[in-house]
Structure formats: C-alpha cells, structure tokens
Image (cartoon, rainbow, N blue to C red):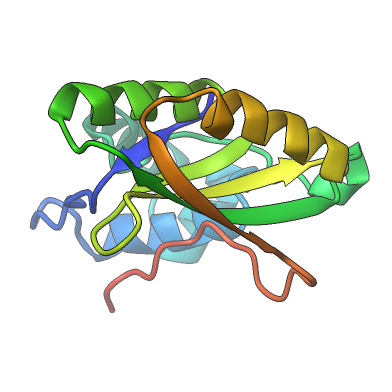
Length: 168
C-alpha cells in the first residue's frame, strides 16, 4: 500500500508515551523482529508488559505499521527519482484527486503535499528510465491538472531510513 502524506502530520507527543515506551520504540525502529523477551530485558519490563505496550502503541497509531525495508536495487528497481510537481489549480477536489492518483501509483514510494513552489514531492523507484518515462506520461502528461514537474535522479543512496528521532 502506498501512502500520500498530506502536509506535516502532528505526531502523538502525548504524555502517555513514557520512558519505557520510548525505549521500546527505539529498539523496534532498529529491528522490529526483536523478540519481546529481549526487549523486556533491555528496558527492564516483562515480555507481557512489552507486548501490552506495543499493542497499545499500534492501536493508538504511534506504531503505524511493521514492514521490511527492501533495497530497491535488489529487486530490480535501482533508480530512485525525486519529482517536484506543480498543479494548475489548487482547488481542494483537484488536490485530493492528485493525492489519490499519486498514492495509487506503485512506483511512488513516498508522496508529500508541501508548501512552496511545488505542490507535491514524490519519491519514485523504477527499473530504468523507460519505466520512468511511461510513469511520467501516466501521472503528469495525461493529467490536465499538472502544470509542470521537475525530476532529480539520485546518483547514490547516501542515507535512507524511516526512523523517527525520539525524545530523550
């Protein structure tokens, strides 16, 4: 499932996340396959207590999902492309339509609705430039609401991560 983030989400910073929760999150962000028994030993809680806390954080949305981070090149998608997209019209219905279209494209790894000159920033992975050209036709040239787009091809994956800095 692809997700298009609308603006900057307000992350839960509620006092319900205590030092145990933050320590558990730090471990899970490094390796979410860490057994709950080992997490418990690391944070000085029982495995059932760790399990309850993880379940609560999943249900409240603090933990948004559990995924495997895959190297795109290892699965035949070695090219990473960043695209700035500027829309013709910023009507709410057209912005929502663009969000749906970008979210539905399997090549779009990340999508952000942003402020500034561009309306969207997309992170795309493709097998080759032919695949990217086909995607541009489908997402941009065939759309009456895309004014222009700018492409930046990544030359090297210097740092890629999904970890969120935690307080403390």
